[in-house]
Image 1 (cartoon, rainbow, N blue to C red):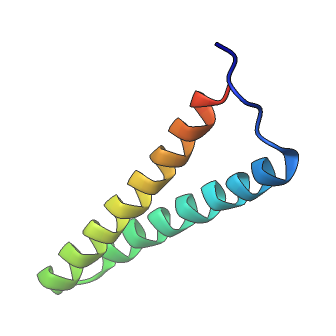
Image 2: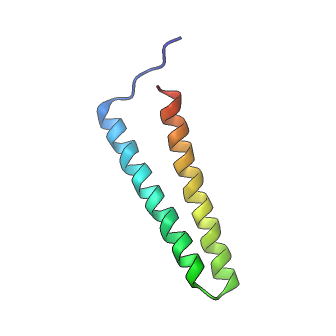
Image 3: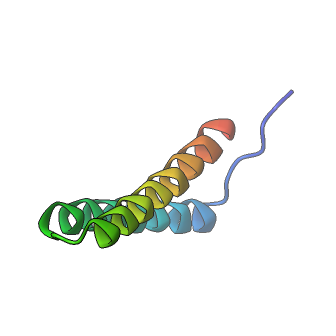
Length: 66
């Protein structure tokens, strides 16, 4: 069964989302390594994980349409 192609406009939007999620992930990791408060560090680590999961989900979506 043929998989539907992603429209160029949608592919561009997904690419922008991938870039943004990756940037937010990196920022959370960087901030987490700099803070002293364990609660804040845990929150930042959780936020980083959420961004990484969204990034991975977007990649999975792209892979499913190739």
